[in-house]
Length: 305
Ligand SMILES: [Zn+2]
Ligand SMILES: [Zn+2]
Image 1 (cartoon, rainbow, N blue to C red):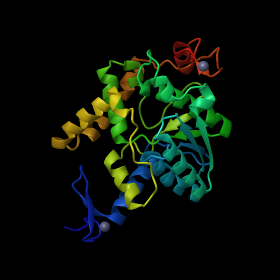
Image 2 (image 1 turned 120 degrees about the horizontal axis):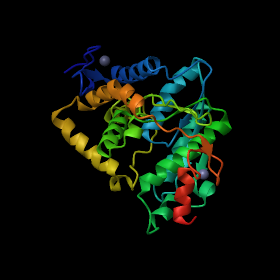
Image 3 (image 1 turned 90 degrees about the vertical axis):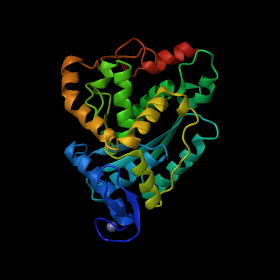
Image 4 (image 1 turned 135 degrees about the horizontal axis):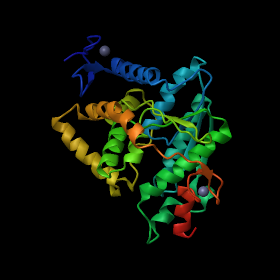
């Protein structure tokens, strides 16, 4: 068995979709080229952008930082990073420390923002409440609000997240399964938010399978936080993820075909179901919101915080 590209006998991966066998160097190269291809195809970056990387310290965000840094080294963009500390005992601190070390290593402006300092409550404390709606509901909304705010404060023109192929396919199927047509029009490599206060979000890893990102950080010897969130399996997303992976065992290309199919019908969704972008402002925190209270603040009121 030898590398399809260079003949090196030390193969580290057989690509699920193409069947290609690749050695370490050719694999690293293939991932970086594919991400750069996505960036170009989807026009994710403009010269002079200041990109805020949402850096958790996990494999996905560390990979985004690493690959976008190649654009920074060529003076095409500037990069800054924010890490959200949700307050999950025995889990989050390792990721925060790793994020700090990567930012220092690359010399990138970085800040850590905690749920506790911002909202006066940690995710662990929320999960002890009787009326909670599941960890991911809060985590997603609070994190998004904190990252948007950080982007404005740091003068970022784009926000880059570590969403990979698996994440994106899960989101597509979850929205179908829940009948959430409004959200279905909003997925994709780049958000097209109408509210000025929301910074455009980009997903450079959208076409890279999760498994390959795991292998990339190992091959590049990048320090990452590998533990998964202790709350992850309680979620609907966890169940959907399991179902897709079960199907992918006998049908190795379904993740790509789901993504391609979605991308083809997305324009129809957008025409038929106009996403409702925020118009007004939240009366409690002043963030952009289409209702009196933004999502984050309405959760806080429900929780009695
Ligand atoms: Zn090779
Ligand atoms: Zn609010």
